Amino acid sequence: MPLIYCSECGKQISDSATACPNCGKPSEKVVRDKAGKQVAGWIIVGLGIGFDFFVYSQPPVEAGHPNEQKLAALRLFGYVVGLVIIAVGCWVANSSKEHS
Image 1 (cartoon, rainbow, N blue to C red):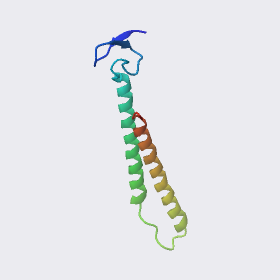
Image 2 (cartoon, rainbow, N blue to C red):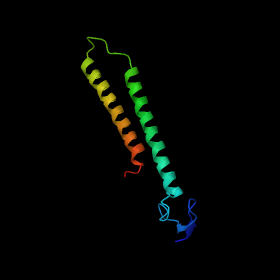
Image 3 (cartoon, rainbow, N blue to C red):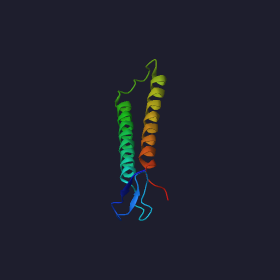
Image 4 (cartoon, rainbow, N blue to C red):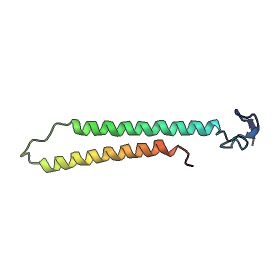
């Protein structure tokens, strides 16, 4: 277990430590991991929003169409799927934050 120096206080710490035991500064690896999760979460949110825009950009079903109810239900299902994708993205982006 090699030792490295804390960039904040200069004390030696383990390279596997998540934070400096002396000053509490998070390790660079922890900071990078959190940033990566936030970016991934917001990308997922963007995909969900794009999916919802795609679902609602489809032309409306004409009244009297033989599959009118099925197509309306499919459109609603697509919208709900988009909302779930957005919720998952928000959860991923916020799961990287520390909870006190």
